[in-house]
Amino acid sequence: MTHKTKVAVLISGRGSNMEALVVAAKAADCPFEIALVLANKPDAGGLATAAAEGIEALCVDQKPFGKDREAHERALDAALRERGIQVIALAGYMRILTPFLVDAWEGRMLNIHPSLLPAYPGLDTHARAIAAGEAEAGCTVHLVTAGVDEGPILGQARVPILPGDDEHALAARVLEQEHKLYAATLATFVTERL
Ligand code: GRF
Image (cartoon, rainbow, N blue to C red):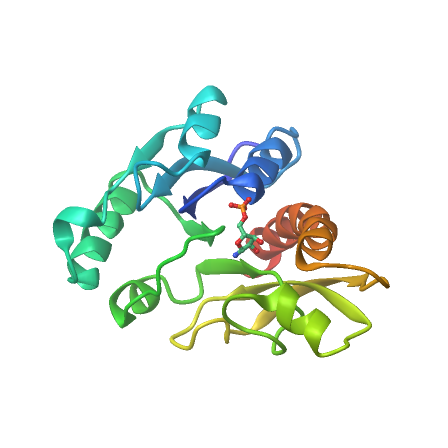
């Protein structure tokens, strides 16, 4: 395959989903490459993981921008465009986006969320699903739109909630599926929908 879609992964933390995408992208027939890993905080653990994989790992620290989230996003956007990035994959990017970045990348920005959306958007999804007595949990890859965790769903994976599960046990079971789902859904997206 000669032309692989250039994907940037945006992270804020450990970056295990990012790592799963990097591993998937190594396959010769994978239709995307991870061209950049971008963090909003210098202590995001995933930056070192990406660098060790030989991928450009860049931090555009949000701190100097203070409360001006759009100014920070304009700096992110410039870094993405300078590198010819075609698709953004949010993977544990823990900052709510302004309309600036959402509009600039409309139809080309994906997110992964650890629940079966539209159920349990936002934080603490696993604890809330257990407290509600749900029998099932899972994860969702969706396009990013203005509402948090609200865009069109591209793919989902389901896992059971087992007796005795706490949020950590459930999060680990879901995370395993996240890693498979994100790579598979991103591959289908860049092949069929871009
Ligand atoms: C994942 O559960 C993801 O779904 C959520 O934040 C977590 C990030 O984990 N948005 P990691 O940084 O990919 O390991």
